[in-house]
Length: 491
Image (cartoon, rainbow, N blue to C red; front, side, top):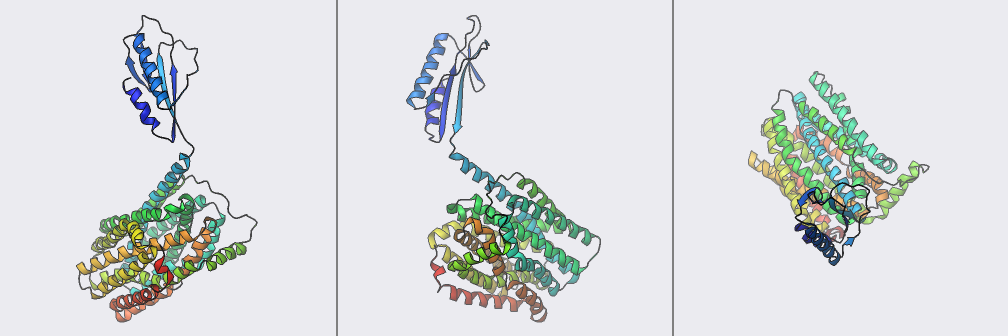
């Protein structure tokens, strides 16, 4: 019992916890041993005088520490024991904090698994197409098929996300992706190499993937306080880029197996685990849009809100031009490593982890960079780093310079993506998040399908070097324009 009086002031220092001390003393026969119990721990007392002294001392200490002391209601039981019960009740003000942390933890864990599965998918699918056709045009066509859903359906999906239950929506999106990946693996193992079917599966996969991503953006907006959005996005980016390091390395091990389609099975398994996690997500979500409202009216409401937001419109214009080069480089670098450098699939997967390492470094430094420079300058720095990375790819003639270029590209990609998403979330009210994400998502990808498809033919005619130097010059021109706009000074 000696620790008990010292324990009460320690608890009293926590203003958000209310301490209630209940003292219950029951009669026992003098011939029996006397015990006191605190939360299941028993102490034998030498005399009733010692019990009285210790009980008084505990109560006095509690009163001095401003702790609520109340006697327990006597019970009819005659069991030989004396109990001192301590209970702590949490203040209701802590409930929102705990709810936010629990919801964000589920989202973060799911992002880790989905990023891991997605990283395997991103690496393995182009390699599967290369193994089947050995053609840059086939690889770029598959990438184009993956980009088209975002272009055609992003606005439609954005309006739907604002109307439906987001948890149920996410479960459907993840579950259907798992089924399509299983179907893709079965077709590949069966030797059915029908490119139109593969393109169709890739199209559907990315449609569902964007449906999940749009709802995830809305969930983050609903779950995270506005002041924490940058930090939350940085944590999510950190998780994604950490997986970016481990994913390619594990892909290298998977690619050493007898069948490359094993990666699709593992991806499907990761998605199924995410379904289980999201079933435990508890979100107090209010219905923002009445069911009787018209679809067109909701879209127009989101479109008007987007057009009025001039800073967001201006940022969207720059992202349109920059996304073209980013997507083209991601496809071209894989073809360059396989066809020009002659890397094996397993070695390529390990080398691509350099991009993940750069992204991880970017996530660690992003918060400090924003505090020091502001969001606008961080976005500009990402463009400059991409220029340097693309020039290194153009000059690359070996594995080392190729890995350094990938590291810089990954670092820049993290600064770029987190800056854009944080800016969009900070500029958008929660009821319009799905529609604004859909509108901007469509605009972001306006030029991507054409650029990616054209890059396949450019590589076939003139090689990868033309792509690298063209993208570097393009980014440099965009940067020269960007520093003259008001976005450069955004904090």
